[in-house]
Image (cartoon, rainbow, N blue to C red; front, top):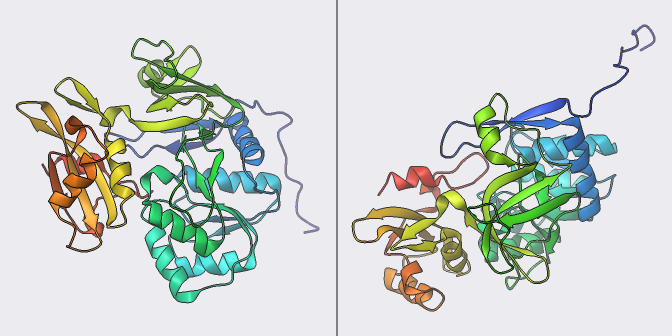
Length: 362
């Protein structure tokens, strides 16, 4: 407008100044505010360009809540590149596919819990979509058949991601799963612009094949939790951020997710990782979703219990036992199986099953 006054822009800006505070999901306590700097946000955009096939002109659909990194990070990345952002108020498959039919998309985020309704909509409407560079997120938490169906229907690979509010797309979101397949590796490729170490309880690096907590440092890492000096002192160690996630490094440098450290079950002196059991359950076509949680036990201290949503009632507890027996050591097998409806799983706004709520069911 001709009579509009020129905006007064700052002459300089410290790259370490915050651009946004995003609150973590707080599944076991009060949420923490992660302060993300201008430096970190620019680096996150650079990591996206370096490690994916997303082009600068590819549009982004922001349908997840703006308080979640899946929208905020990628929205800012798109705006920095000068590309289009389409904002949709929540999961609306018709609006999402309409936008995908009009724009070339970069990363179409699909979180656990959103994939099944999207598949249903795609099968019903059979829309003609433009190009999509990649779809999905957190493949470890999604049944393999759902990954295959979604990628085939949308003609795009699945992003085998592992990032966090605190770190952005890194540390390990550089691998893609080809469309339409169920036999794929969940091993993660380490991202650019970051360094990763796996450490034991004493802070020493573990060998390949051993389980260790993932620590990361690099340009994409946040500046710490807002007004949480005690938490920052615990979670940062000599410039490395401790993520609380357990991984194993393979000989080729890829990483296999083991579990969240806080979910580990101590049973008779043995470590049991629920995610290992869940991957076996989710690979079975008869199972829609599953989660394994700890239950206190007078003999073993803690034992695993599986909650399963099944396609039909033909799947029995005995058949689940047989399935686990072929893949797991005896001490890792669920000591109890409970069948529930898919909509009974308590979920966060990002689709993650809230384990702490389900532990109260036992």
